[in-house]
Amino acid sequence: AQSVTQLGSHVSVSEGALVLLRCNYSSSVPPYLFWYVQYPNQGLQLLLKYTSAATLVKGINGFEAEFKKSETSFHLTKPSAHMSDAAEYFCAVSDPGGYQKVTFGTGTKLQVIP
Amino acid sequence: DAGVTQSPTHLIKTRGQQVTLRCSPKSGHDTVSWYQQALGQGPQFIFQYYEEEERQRGNFPDRFSGHQFPNYSSELNVNALLLGDSALYLCASSLGTDTDTQYFGPGTRLTVL
Image (cartoon, rainbow over all chains, first blue to last red; front, side, top):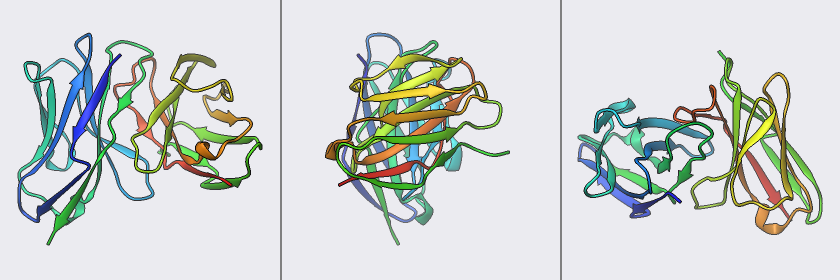
């Protein structure tokens, strides 16, 4: 069964600083990987996804993530944090193909300090 | 273009009662997945419906059941509610059998007293 581990339940960065949110996955087959963002009292919004094409994936709002098979990692980065980035971020994994369930990590809450 | 909608927004029930939550998928989508998100946790997959059939199921007891209608909307039913069922219930829709692009609704907050 696939799973993801998000390192750090809370991350604080200063406005303008690099954002790095860590995610490691476990999967018996080449996985699909995702990052979602959740703002308070809202549903989840897809930031980006890796589906076995380019290993460096660019998403919305200036975020990107790199799939590293050797490290089983899919860390999320953004060069310069904005106040509006404060939210909870979830890494998720699924097996490729149809009817696949998506397994989420426990989330990382990002605080941006002005 | 309407996104995924869910109703009701909030719901309060007592232990032992039954509840029905509703979801309308994004226009053009035909697959609906349901997730339970307990406070401080990531969403957990409950089940997925496509062509009015349950295609995948997570580790949830039979008290959790669902239905998909011909217009692709879906219901989640939970019987014999427990305190531990208190959570945000999220519906996600996608096109076809691939879940690599899911759109989530705002969720229904269920409180069981």
